[in-house]
Length: 342
Figure (tube, rainbow, N blue to C red):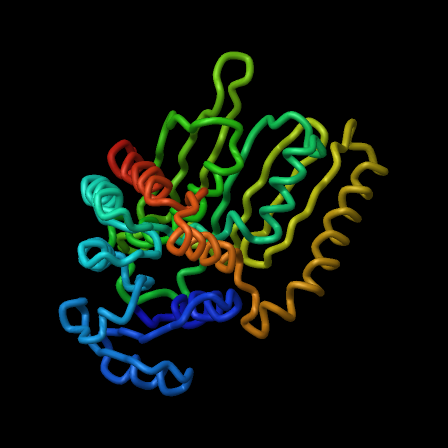
């Protein structure tokens, strides 16, 4: 339900590649969209509506995938769970923490799977970083940094300015769950500063959030830096180790590891340049064609595989459960509640 860009170019291809999903029908609130897409894709049912009450073929389905704007998530997820359906929903899965808690509790009562699309943690680049943290290649982790640069002129949904802090509410879950996944322990917020939009938008110019992970001598800084008025669009998550720096280029699905450069002499600088350029382009040549042809799924294939396994066999959900969705929702609302406007 919801046939925007993500639903058409990520969710449906991920289900097709898995092979275990029978897509019974498509639902969208815009006239003609569901009918057009269902006919083009050979899907037998379609409905133009904004509520599950208006879908006459719900008895034919076991599960619902929700890819509508965030405002609609809570009611749709609740309605589907009450009807005994498994649900996989886009982030953020609710507009308030109390709504999120209600959905998690409802899924447990109904004994249904409730899953969230936290996909970038399963992208090849992120998995390489996770592996190198685990095997000691990065060394002892000294810090984690997530940086988002967003060009306001890029393809964006029409509704984002109606959200709390605008685009922040829609996009920040990706960076937050990546920080949560890559940090060595729970995150505790230390400070949150917001610089307002320079053009009068709800979406601010910059949001800076400082966390800490660990305690005592093992305490490390974890930083979230969101820039919404940038001339370029780049998302990077970087882990700083004592042996090396590991950087995930989220949009390109490229992972680059740069070795400790010691005294930063000329040879070390050249070695860093070589490692950066070779690591970037060698992977860009292999990932680039997938990006151009729309076949780069950014971990959505793993999200759908885990959802399928949970819904069909009762396998426990790891990293994409309703509880995981709620944890990230709480982090978003902590930013909203504790932010300081500069």
